[in-house]
Length: 409
Image (tube, one colour):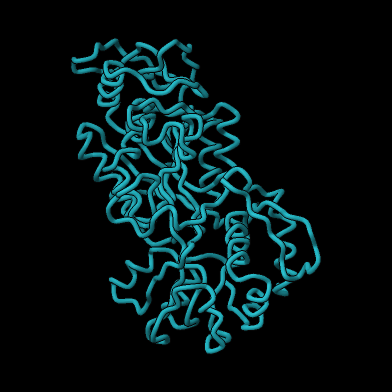
């Protein structure tokens, strides 16, 4: 995946190419989502739990015993109450397990009976994930907890330190945390037949079996249909002088949003960025207030909109969502934490997300790594995915300074 070079109009004649990324405020995940109410629960408060012990690695990774607990033996093909056979270890290499071993994991997951996912995805994605997974595995209760911004990292770090019960699976866009966790050996290798199957194995969308590009969120253009007769379908069309003082924009308060501004500069060029600046855009801290302002008529158009506008329009809001080509995409990365209390059920979640049914459920607001998934908004070939490895605070900090100087913020 390519790394963007950013040369702002402010730095005329500057030759340095920089990779995007920067740490920012607490709205990290509004880069891909909005704060619309979700049909999920609030994140549980961390409580102390017995200290986890690391299970010994074996040749073939299969059913996992939850940290700090014991479970009786079970053999594949019987109604399991848990298995001890061999272990899915953190940071392993190997791709998948045998059908017999996978059946043992399914039985152990049924015995665990529940699984918790911390997700930044939009409410309709979370609801579809929960419904589809529970239909596939009716003996397992899935709880999806929607968490945005820096709260995601804070909760995960606290649960790791205290060994408290909480997330088994993460699905979000706090990229630096995920990449660091993978390097530190804090993520468990996926071993399911679909997660490590030919559609994913050996592609850029399955990284060493440790995290998966589960969905590609699509960011587009939003407009107020009561103020604009025809909604712009490209960023160039947003530069129409009739929108002077009526264009909404989101400040690059963190690395994900800084990547969007680099992408936008690539689309508009230096002259286009100067035109945008001269049209006196109205700045918002994140997608949430920008879209609220759009619906309220504070602005007529916004360069940064999420698919939530489609649901808002269906509910009667005077808004429309259009997707330019190319569209910018912050991918949702999913993984299993090394301290999961329901590790076998977590394996089933990652495997389900890799299936065509799972992709149909969670890619409804964007695109899928798989071809031919129904209900997606765009083809992955029409997207510019963010470079998750290059999206760091160190890279983005100077770019944020350039942006503030350029826009006088």
